[in-house]
Image 1 (cartoon, rainbow, N blue to C red):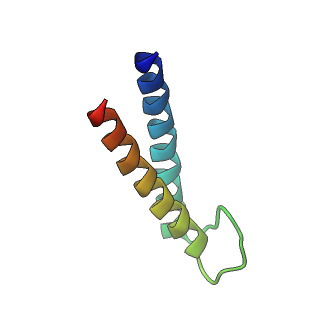
Image 2 (cartoon, rainbow, N blue to C red):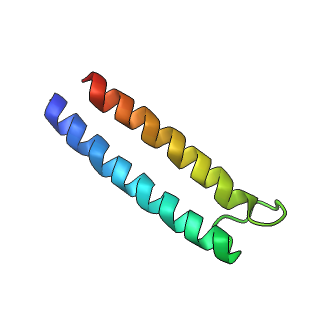
Length: 65
């Protein structure tokens, strides 16, 4: 059970990391992924912060397991 959970977590972490990289690249080019009405590419940075927090949380959970 725990092994399957860790495998699922690692897949989720990789997916978040891919979204994070994509957001970062697009933010540098001035392209918006999510248009929430903020000026500039603020949405991309919100996504980046969310992904970083999720990555850190996932790594902590994996190391504690």
